[in-house]
Length: 458
Image 1 (tube, rainbow, N blue to C red):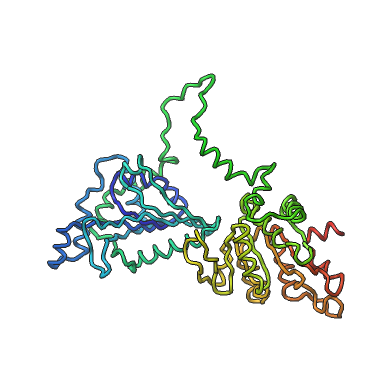
Image 2 (image 1 turned 180 degrees about the vertical axis):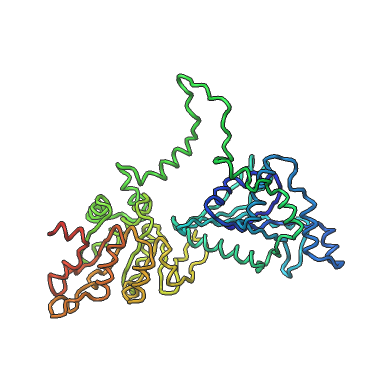
């Protein structure tokens, strides 16, 4: 876990430290950057030759940590233990100008941001600028922006990670970052528990206050107050997953009116989840629309959290544009070196991001060239390195075929067919699109069928 916080006080610390014991119990580590606001007299001392580190040390020591509050002392004991045991590293940030000179007064290091990562590599990033006083935590109307890698927010999470890395390495333009002065560290370590185990780690639920007496049971408890707006938005949020009618939400919220045959194809795909079908409609009948309806509905309903579309390089851009314009899905194209999103109104962050061969498939929704992926080195990345997919769509599936179309002596699969034969075991659902399933021999249709379709036809 990494975090930056702009206000450092005992009361705020006691409130913000809730749940940190869970990080310790799971063997996690935390890096924390705290702010230090200098006063005009501090800058005068620096100009007269005082060291910045000494000035920061004096400013931090001027604010007593304990404040005589039991809850604050409880939180400080946990943080002191984490520092002593290597679970927590702390640095201090001092606001500065463009010339890297400290500033005082109203110039605050006021950022509140953080990144959390679990053992499986899932990451969550948050950022905001709340008032970190006790009153702010308890009473203010504040907001945080939260992004997760498992819901398509990888670009935002990556941006927060890069921002924190610059800050931690003292390469930020707005702040000077240094290690916590020794005297301040010693002041914090004074709160180490005597028995070498903080109270928060002794209690299984440190932040839950149990009542001393059971609450009286009434015959007819009054109904809880429910905000109608919350009910409406909750219904809208979960509507795509409803058993009756929910399957049409993706279609209803798309910027396209599908033809009847496209709706029927989508219904067959979605009703038998995960789908294993070959769509062999003629050119112009809208196979991309049928697939787009499936992709949007599966995303909205949460049925598929990892989806991959493979298509020839020549039509990848067309796929990206259609998904964005018709289904509001801005999915990146992986070109072998970068993930590239469509720059469009409302899009936040960089439209391109460099990624290595071992990282591109961490993106939950990706468009990639089938010509690129069938190369031996790239196929190894996809088959050995990537986590299983919930749904894979292969466009122009007739390119996956036997040598010679199945007519010659050589019946070996080509590289794309070999890739798909292995990839079908690495995905829950597989949809193949082609207008020409048979070009030379009927065996090509058999090769094109997903495994469950083969069983039905057999």
